[in-house]
Image 1 (cartoon, rainbow, N blue to C red):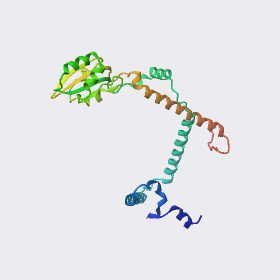
Image 2 (cartoon, one colour; image 1 turned 135 degrees about the vertical axis):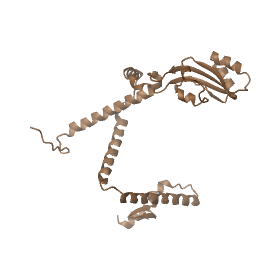
Image 3 (tube, rainbow, N blue to C red; image 1 turned 90 degrees about the vertical axis):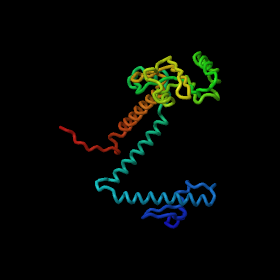
Length: 266
């Protein structure tokens, strides 16, 4: 195909910076036909101006490239890394067994528990915060202490300034403290089964610690179950790729594709 025909396929020439050219076909996927003519022109100008700025930066970078940098080698290494990454991702998608049983996860948890030591304390907690002048807070507190979920949720609805009544999710103590006034609770207070009703200025807080795991200890299994599954899958992937490399090596070693020029030591 001659240059004229090739350029015709590319569409209108929109900009040039040095030897680099930007054609309409290069950015067609960035334009939407649903835009008005005014919007389309504004968007087109923005895209072209950004392209020009990028190309000018590239030219400036080329001018200031250190003499000791082998750009071609860097590009080749990046290309090789990209090829490897895409092929390894393809292998993992096609060949990796992604089923991890509860038994496998629990065995890993028991054998590697010291790898998951908590950097900070975590808890399952409940929190309710009310304006001080809300009526019947004493009655609410009775239901709160009894664990009457229906009554507590109904009272909080529309009256509480903030509630977190989830009793199934582990969260860090730091997350809880972001919801409380500064220095509201001493860290030494936290522990399983602890409850508190406390005022601060014109607000009243109700806190319950259902479960607690201190810092520097191994967390409950359920807290790190998802993380353990990811670790197991990653180890499988590493093993799969190692086996694939070895298979290719065993298959092609000694063939015309592979030439080694190592001198054996006598």
